[in-house]
Image 1 (cartoon, rainbow, N blue to C red):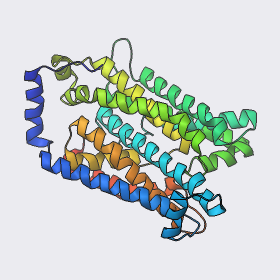
Image 2 (image 1 turned 180 degrees about the vertical axis):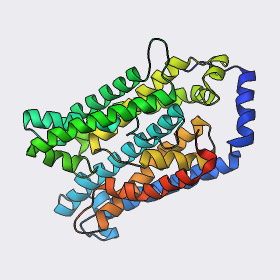
Image 3 (image 1 turned 90 degrees about the vertical axis):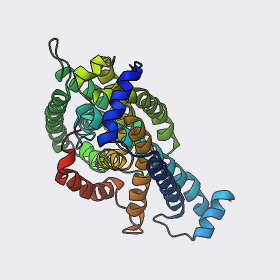
Length: 354
């Protein structure tokens, strides 16, 4: 899936990039350093602040010297796993967004475009309606399976024996399947109160109440997805020049697109299954990445894997303290933070398409 691109072809790609999309190495290094510092700061604040007020000194004393008290347990049993999950899910959504936008050549692409959220949603409400059992640990695997099946359906509908799965076909197939699955989801929840109650909480997106069992369940899928994304980055760079040009550069277009869909499914499926659909992270993070490091997918993917966790943790901290001692779902805050970025993308004529 990641063929070698010969030296002449690589030179042509880089020559094109030097005119329009690359950034000097010093700018990239400073951008990465700045985002790493932002991530470290977000982690520290995430561990220090919460809906329950505790002093900074007291918080870190409990962190390094747990004593089994209620406050100490809050740090180790709630804030630590919540922060780690935020890092992993943020990285998954950021990288998945970068892959989606590269695959569809659409800067507005996010998990909703390829039917990921709709597939996970319909699986959650269906299994709750049929079994009457609720709880994230129960329907986690069903949500992941729903996201995966939706991705397969989108790719199958977006391709045929005569025509390959072009970016436009994938986007249109994703919109069509998302609409159909959303209608099915609404039909179920309107007739089942238990499914409606569970879906109402899950669909808002939240890191609250997810413990290490959820973290360990999704971690292998996200690690594989990120590694696959990094392996596919050179081929995606070539495909940015067009499918025909990519073929002439030695890229196996079909295999690259299938591999990208697999990586997106692993990343978005696992993240959405664990915390619910969170909007705009997968849209805003790659957009910021391209502004800072250019359009080289190797840099965009790596940068998104760092900026995504910082973005999501910042949103989660705001969600904890904005109406303290109550909490707002992080999906709501992430949408509020990402909406201005969405408007900025729409208003920028230079990036109407990737």
